[in-house]
Picture 1 (spheres, rainbow, N blue to C red):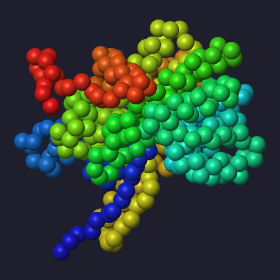
Picture 2: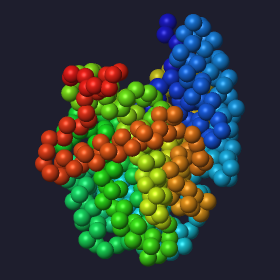
Picture 3: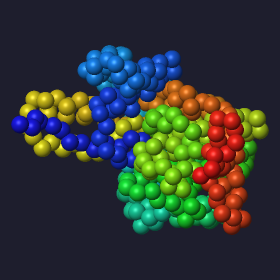
Picture 4: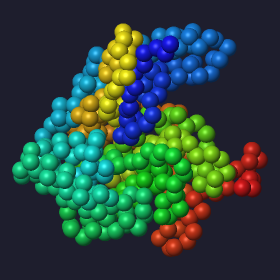
Length: 410
């Protein structure tokens, strides 16, 4: 006889994925708050110590996560005074003047809540969107709540480098200042491998490469605005703790999967794109500091977003699982809080190159802190967008390296 079970769906970062085990739910929910990192050790224990019985591994891993789990479930505030239960409205002070913010992916979910709250706080909000009708509907919803809201809609398909250039040209031609750039949009691919019109794996193209080019094209306007107004510009890259799920060589992976040399795995592709977001943040922050620019860049993990909980059988166990999941998953206003905090709060002034979760500084994966890999990603990204601009074939990534350093045949 089949026992009771709970069916649920959740979003990691901003994207719907199949339900993970409860331990992974805990690990994704609990950020590695600076000085912690226990959830990474717990996951390692649960996956690598295979000599131990599964039940023992699960109990030991859960025990390591327990202190953080209690803080997360209670919504206990961190050093900033905010925590996992804080909402976007709670963490945003008045912006204190005219501020222009570009928010990608603002037609639904976390991006929509970010746009709504910033507009409510007095910001001019620019919504770039592939689906212009959805963006116009979002603008109408914002204006229904805030009749005086200044919301501008412009077309943008982040998976297309040509579309990114077109959007940047349109925005710059308006002569508007730019204080905030929130790179929130993204994609989780289901099913088979898909390539962008530029020949790039679709998840990487949308989540990372399009945002890399967008940031590059708009950075000059942000620097000009900061110099003219004295208000520090802020760039926020929305990543995910899933970035830590990928531990291999990201360039090798994308080279091989694009050429169908290895099977396509949507979760791995998503993790690679989110790792790229964190590496981009690190390298851009270093370059901005070296240039003396009055612009910062940080990345955030918004948390797992509650979308829908369904049960197909009644019972005590089902009720317990249902209750646990409802406590682990965030509401949209809670998930948008970290983005809004990093984008607007005075406490984050001057902070750059950092990773945030639950409105507090956190620790990304070790791979995400590798400056060499960040520089390598930057160089390859520059080569890719240069190739597209000059109508060359995007070779994507150099052939994978052997242990001796020479390219492997693919």
